[in-house]
Length: 180
Image (cartoon, rainbow, N blue to C red):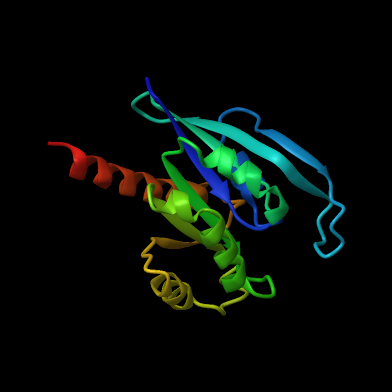
């Protein structure tokens, strides 16, 4: 049995804690405290990390880590992404400028993105259809990035599983390319 580390990141309130809770086999560990940021209507916020785990059919275990959403905790981002197998960026399409939100995380994880697979999950697309997934693809292309993108609802277990499976498929392809 092997353990693998996957990291979820994105703005405060996007659903990182919720996504991990939706699929974790164990009660997630969370470092949520009362939210002091009046600009976001949310009672609590993660200040350290979220943690959950999932056992795959072959016995391997995925350890799921969620980062704090605020850029002031970017030092935690760097710690959590260390030795990770992949990164899932979650963006909430109902926020005022989701493409700017994406830029914050692409910049914050630029070094990691050079070394590891990443998947982009966009929530609230049905109720907030702009920007479109094409707009996200264009923003990524301007940075020379091509990432798989999915519309997700972090409350739905099937959506979170699809996001992780997309990430794991990238990892599998990279492993095959490296194998002799």
